[in-house]
Image (cartoon, rainbow, N blue to C red; front, side, top):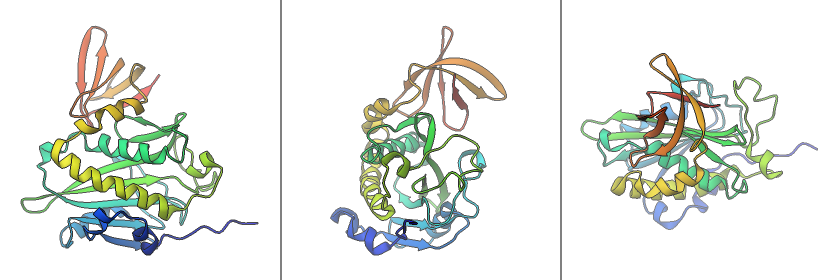
Length: 267
């Protein structure tokens, strides 16, 4: 018998939000189909009334991941979430935001996934080298203020057939839990934590998240291949610094790598 999946519902999400976030009057916008929730959030930032807006869709037809890669987005099966945040920060103060979001996201999803989820710097969440979630941070100039879009994709109900076009190994939350997860509850629980992140990150940046990130870091202590400026190197990953930059050792030379400059693969 085919399992009926609950649709995304703003009232269910609101009912599971904590008072602090509700008092912030976040706008929750859910569409049946969209090109990209990140694009929705970027457009909406220019005239939103609250500092936070929440964009969800049952399906994306032009979802995107890092470096413009396509994000496969079957209808009604996963979480496609973007948060539009009118931040008090400068562009130079956004270093480490992707890792901070990843830390909150992994910690939250690990409540369902028996602590199996690890973070692959800078923005992928994996279970035994199978991707379950990804993050895409984008910015918008709002005439003196920095608009930040926090884009999150989470595989929840997706079947093998629906994910056949994904170019890497992947897994869904339902596969991990052997149960049908309620996307509205997953979204609400995550939003509560991300709301706290917007406050603490504004005050202290990545530092409050660094210890938790290190406990979730998939690459630390491992030999990896990095691709940078068209060149490949084999390095040992030493960890990250307080800005979320990757620290690696190339023979006797220590290197500091920034998000966006490099792609990395475990050997």
